[in-house]
Image: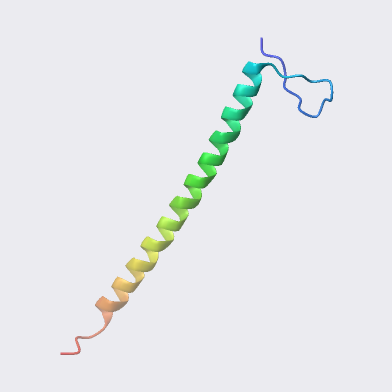
Length: 63
């Protein structure tokens, strides 16, 4: 059974394995947030490009 990790407890001394798990979890969260931001930026760029393309397509030919 895993013991509960309480980082607010001044008496808590994590084992090397617990530190490894905490670091892995923290970096996984950072990675996931970064990837979500990158996806949001890519989606915004795609939306702007699509909008510009539709606007250009809707304009009557100037020739």
